[in-house]
Image 1 (cartoon, rainbow, N blue to C red):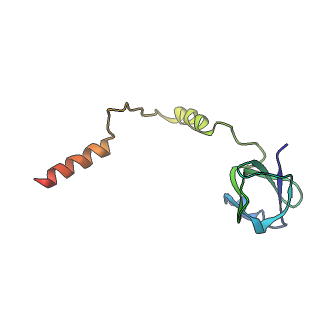
Image 2: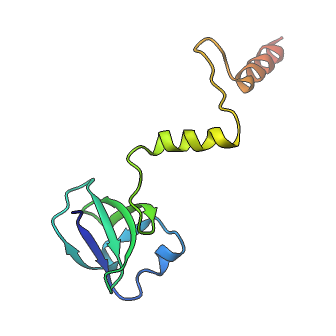
Image 3: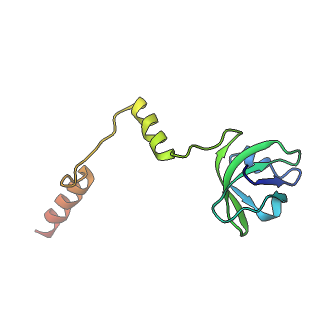
Length: 114
């Protein structure tokens, strides 16, 4: 079971606007003993789950990584790349290739030196 960060009444409004930080002053109660970097559940004053985040013992107590009740994926980069594959192709360059912008930039630098 993950620790639960329960917010004070009315302090869930920034979360509804997708703000990714939970400040320490917005917290009513911490259920459990999370360590820095631990995954935590963020709940409103009634105990309803609002988000998932990573705990940090400081003024920014939680950095939200997922809004809603579903826990975040353990492999977000893989999921993002798979999702990108559905909408278009992914450009893969080998180590010898330079991006087109780099080639354009070097062409301009060489031209300006003459």
